[in-house]
Amino acid sequence: MMRALFAALALASVAPAAASSAPPVERNDYANAGFSAAVSSGLRAFYRREFKEAERAFERALTAVPDNTFALSFLTAAQAQQPGRLDVATNLAEDAAIGAPKNYVDRIRLGFAYLFQSVTGRDRTLDARDEFNAAVALQPGASAAHVGLGIMRFEERSANRAKSEFLAALRADPNNVLAREYLGQLYQTDLRDPQRGLSYVIDVPNLVPQYADIAFHIGSLLCDLHENDAALKYLQRGIDLDVEHVGEAGQHGYTLIARIEIERRQFAEATKTLNVAIASDVDTIYAKTLLQRIKAGDVPTPLPHGTTIPAEASPLAPSSPR
Image (cartoon, rainbow, N blue to C red; front, side, top):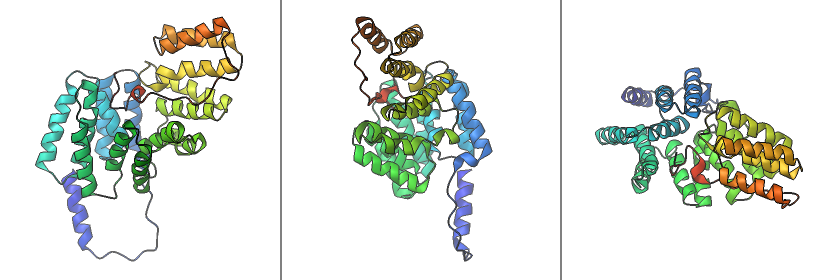
């Protein structure tokens, strides 16, 4: 499919371009109905821990849009949850990249496969960086390689360099969900500007309404901004979507809701929420700590804001233990 696409582009490049003053069309992968339907199916399966079905759905999405980094990240995350599957996928990606070294998409897929190898206990970050840099050399203005490099800089806590990569990605693809999500986290945790962070993520649910973790991130940012009523709605939405507690919404949503309830002096409600977290076996250490503080009356008013989410909590983070 990609060879045919490149051939068509090559033919188009030799034909005289028609004069036009129209601005270039802004890229929006999510306007593709087939792509969006496959992504929604994949997310539902992923959050139900049906990782094989999620993999199939994200492969369908990538058939429609081969270089979409959101679909590619979830595809690779789903593979990483199946014993041995990521190794097989990595070997296939290596064969493809060796067979077509100038194929941008093959380089991107191999880069993400290497990036997620840390989930299986193998550190292939240097190889991932090589692939993303090779992809940038092939198509400097495309978004996907910049997202990959940005994720690596984010994991290294190199905030400004990560921001530069994500902004480069957004220049090519203003609707790149991963770039927007990571910029939201950077502005919240490293650059200490939650209002700016919120501006990057607030409309992402319009693109991927089944994405539980973005609802959690929006809720967390709203919490930092003391917009607690709105925060609670997003946090609950994330929990409802993350039915098997796979990602950040299911892992940390209850305790963040409880923090808001404690700040409001709603101790009975907070106790109930924390007990649900413990019963669900999510964020149990922190939940038990908050319960002990409630029982001891050791609860400051208000609780400090500035929730920092561990990078490994995300289903997209290469260091995810799940």
